[in-house]
Image (cartoon, rainbow, N blue to C red; front, side, top):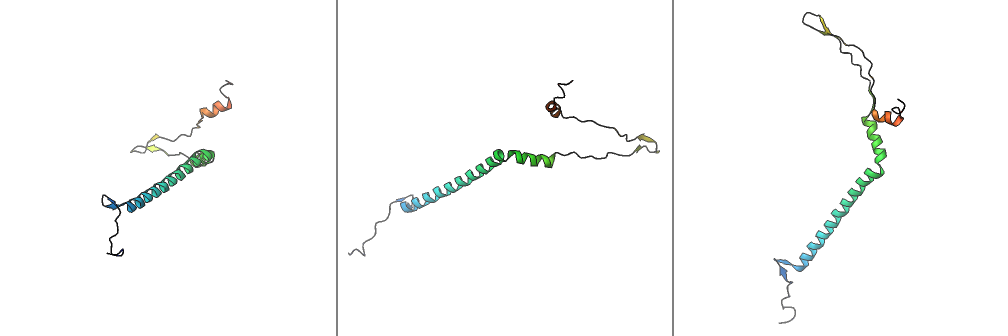
Length: 112
C-alpha cells in the first residue's frame, strides 16, 4: 500500500464531536458572550450617563411636563328637586394653597 491509499488518522472524538469542531464551537460561544457583555456594558453606561450626568436637565424637563398650574372654572349650576326648588347652589370661594417647603426656604416661619 502506498501513502495515497493509507487511511488517514481521524481526530479523537469526544461524545461524537471532533476536537476541532469542539474548539470552533467554544470560540463562537466566547465571541457571543463577549458581544453580549459589550452590549450590556454599553447599556449600563448609557443609563448611568442619563441618571448622573443628565439628571438636572431631565428632571427639569419632567417637571415642566407634569407640574403646572391650571385654572379650571368650577361653576356647576344649581341642584333642583323634582318640583324645581333649589336644593344647592354653587358659591365662588377664594382658596389659598401653600407649599411648606417653599415657606421653609423663604424663612417665613422664622419671622412669625
